[in-house]
Structure formats: C-alpha cells, structure tokens
Length: 212
Length: 329
Ligand code: B12
Image 1 (cartoon, each protein chain N blue to C red):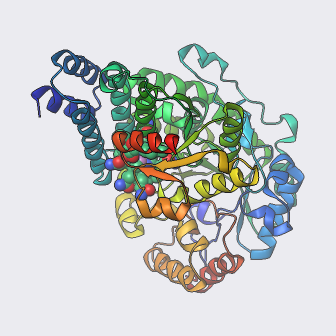
Image 2 (image 1 turned 30 degrees about the vertical axis):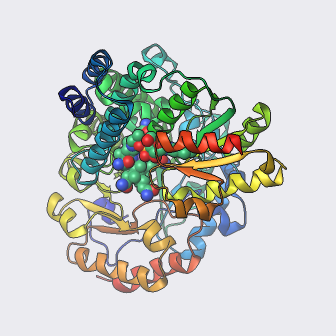
Image 3 (image 1 turned 180 degrees about the vertical axis):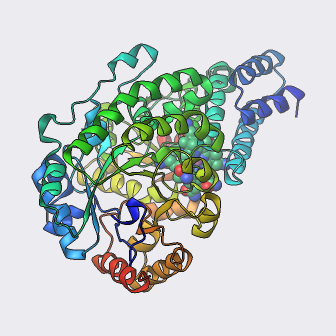
C-alpha cells in the first residue's frame, strides 16, 4: 500500500474531511493506486470506524464525521475510480430501503454504475415501498437496486417484492440487493434475482441481468 | 406525589410511560385518529389508567405535540409512530424561521386540560415537552444536526438557543394547565448516540437553563433514552427532581453515580421486557429493580421509555401488579 493511501485511510478514520480530500487529490495525481485498492482502503477505514463505535470510543457524530470525509473525498475520486466507459446502457432505480439510512455504500455503487453508462435514478435513503414502485413505473427501469444494511430491513425488502408482483411489474424488472449485512443466503430467502457485495461484483451482476 | 415533594411514600409509585403509542388500542382506536383528535387521546389515556390502575398519567398534547408545534410537517398513518417528514432548517439563514409556538392554539392542549380536570386525588398528571436540544435536532434533521457537531459547532449552539423559547412556551402552558410534574425529554442526548463531551457541550447547558425556569413551578423529570450512565452525574446537576432512566442503565451503578437523594424513575425495558418478554420476565425485572431501590425509597417504578403498541396487555398489568407486590416499603 502506498503511503498516501495509508494516510488517506487514516484521514477517514479520524473524520478529517479537508485532509481526506487533499489526499484523494494526491492519489489521483500520483496515479499509482488502482481503483480496487482505493475502494478496499475505504471499506477498511469504515470498518475501523465501525469497530471504534462498537467499543464505545466513537459515537454517532464521529461516524457521521467519517461519512462526511468519504463523501467529500469521493467528489474528487469519482472520475478516477470509475473510468468513464459508458459501454453499458440500462435504466436503474436505486435506493436504501425504509428503516435504513446508510448511504455511503449506495452512493459508491451509484457512481460506479453511472460511470459504466447506466442511467441511474437515486431515490435516497429510508425510501418507502410506494416511492420505489412509482419510480419503477415512471422510469421504466430495467434494474431495481435495493440497499439494505440492517437485518431488520427484511420486511421492507419483502414488501417491495410483493408490491412489484401485485402491480404486475415483477416480470419486467430484475431486482438486485446488497449491503453490509447481506449474505447470499439472505438474498435467496428474500427472493431477489441477484445480489452483490462490492463494486466489481455489482457491475458484473448488473451486466449479467441486462444481458439475460 | 409524596416522593416528588421529597417525602417517602409507603409504597413505590407506579407511573409507566404510556402515551399515544400504546393507549389508543385500549379504547380500540387507531393511533392516527387519536393523534389528530385530542378528545380521543384524552379518552385513551384515561381508559388505560383505569384499566391498569397505575398512579400517574402522561398527559400528551394532541395534534402531534412536538414537531408540529414548531411547524415541521408530520405524517402519521394507521398505527405508525408520527414521522417528521420535512425539516425547517437548511442552514444559518433559516434560524429565524423557528417559531415560538402557541401551545393553546388548535385545541392541542385539550387532552391535558381534560386529564387535569378529570383526575381525582388518586393519581398525578404529568406533562411532557422536548428539550431545546431535541427540538433543535428535530427542526434540523437528526443526521444533519449531528454532522454539524464537527462541521459547525457554533451553529449547533445557535440552533439550541433558538429552540429554547419553544421548550419554555410549551412547558409554561402545561404548568398553566395544572400538571403535577413535567417530563423534559432529551432523547438524543443519550450516550447511546453522542459522547459525554458533546452532551456537556451542547445538551447540558440548555437542560439546566430550562429546568431552572420551569422547575421553579413544578418538579421536573429529565428523560434521556437508552444509555445515560456516563452522564448521570451531570444530569443530577441540571436541577431535575427526577431522572428517568432507560432499560440499559444498571440501577445500582446509577444510584452510586448520583447519590441517595435524587429520585430515579425507571427503568423496566419497554421493548425487551414489556413488549418482547413474558409475565415472568416483567416480574423478575420489577423485583430486581425494587431490590436495588427499596431501601432508599427515592424511586418511581416505570418503564424506561414509551410502551410500544404491540406490547401484550398482560405484561402491562404484570408491571403494576408486581410493583404493588414487591414495592411495599
Ligand atoms: C457509517 C455507519 C453508520 C452511519 C451511516 C452514515 C451514512 N451516511 O451512511 C450511521 C451513524 C448513521 C449509522 C447508523 C446505524 N447503524 Co451503522 N454502520 C456504519 C458502518 C460503520 C459503516 C458503513 C459503511 O459506510 N461502510 C463502507 C461502505 C463502502 O461499505 P458498505 O456499506 O458495505 O457498501 C458496500 C457493499 O455492501 C455494497 N453495497 C452497498 N449497498 C448495496 C446495494 C446493492 C444493490 C448492491 C448490489 C451492493 C451494495 O457495495 C458497497 C461498496 O463496496 C457499519 C459498520 C461496517 N463496518 O460496515 C455500520 C453498520 C452497517 N450499522 C449497523 C447498525 C446496527 C446501525 C444502527 C442500527 C446503529 C444504532 N445503534 O443506532 C443505526 C441504524 C440507523 C438506520 N435506521 O439505518 C450495523 C448493521 C448490522 C446488521 N447486521 O444489520 C453495522 C454493520 C455495524 C455492526 N457491525 O453492527 N451507521
């Protein structure tokens, strides 16, 4: 790992947004770290943040401070991380489900999808079933991506699938879920069409679903 | 009432936190109906007290007392908890948009005045208001508010100062309506959410200020959700007569932290024990609490927070029954 990357991770853990943005700039200028390296550092940093929260060293404002540091750095990193290939087409609706407000992972996935060429409609966090259904109908989406981090979001996921079925929309759309607490088993139980754990696998699943 | 006036009663007073979340089902009404209709809310709160026979009712204001008092749109559907759907404050320029509410407008006070006028000698009536810190978080949006702690701490101070008149106005109206004691809720000041340092910096000063003013009229009960153990010594210095502790707080450690004089109200876990537990769990929890607090007699038996709608009625009944059984001094 490069020294800049190491310091970048540190800046996120400490929630220093000025520093994380400056280091993001340096990473781009050095051009040595691969997008995968950067994403991994980012996740590792947030894992450390989560660990400090669990041990009582950090509280919610400290986690939000780190989330802010990621968000600001991402603005610099986005064009570098996800080469603008635009070789994919497809309409995507994405949001974090009702009861859940985690958005860092969702935002990263959205940046990656846009760079790949998808037309993405970001519904935000704590999104109700109604809002998802309306967006799917209005945009004629090919893919519905549901971010759901906490295990307690299972009823929300089930509700969305049931409503798609009820409204006669289910057969026209592929539903993909993901998030921190997701496992393949969880996704199977819920009954989505696909599931992924990181940027790479998400892009691969989306491509596969579009081709199917 | 005796315990609030510094005397020692013969038996522990029992005042669970039963509000517009649980009470409407006692009269077979939906929460959104009672939320919009003060008469319904008053009926529900009275009926619940009659059904279970506890010693104090929490007289909530109607029409979504708190957020909507400050002009934030609130939505409630069926039996859901009211949700603030829009926040008022996008930035510093919006500070002057925070209104000083008129609690007497729109019949909001109806449940309170009715409960006060219909209450006999048998039980007390508590009113409830949010702290300036909690109002500030509500008008700003909780996540933005907590992000401001580091991004712009001066703004946090200004926001809390700007919402203080709201707490005072609602508090004064409740006192004028004749409540016996006032609960000041500061849910987000919890050590389950923010550090003790941030509590000292942003929440404590405004708690102490409003308690100095409102506490001169009626005893104040300071409620902080979830874990408050690390900040209890400070809470004890706010001037509150009673500290309302939630389920996660160890009573023995709490008593050691604040000393023998101050009254504790708590702390049977409303979710883990009352909603999810069985009658035996309720009994065991009440007995454990009384084991710690019986000798000191500065205790009000209560849930640590609002009893949720799905809680079985047997468990609420068991709370009161075991309180009577184990709470005899
Ligand atoms: C930061 C954080 C928060 C912040 C969120 C700020 C924000 N703006 O997002 C705050 C403080 C608000 C928060 C709150 C809570 N949190 Co939190 N939080 C975290 C933390 C530390 C980091 C999450 C993160 O951003 N990771 C970095 C990103 C890049 O990774 P990611 O989210 O996993 O996303 C990647 C993949 O999952 C995937 N992906 C993401 N979404 C999707 C969607 C699709 C469709 C696909 C295909 C892929 C995909 O791609 C991303 C890029 O690689 C994690 C712990 C951790 N180590 O993950 C806990 C964690 C997610 N939180 C958790 C919990 C429990 C909570 C709270 C309930 C805590 C509480 N006591 O209040 C609340 C819940 C509030 C709510 N209603 O949602 C749990 C969830 C546990 C579970 N099994 O369900 C975790 C795992 C912590 C833990 N170990 O217990 N949290």
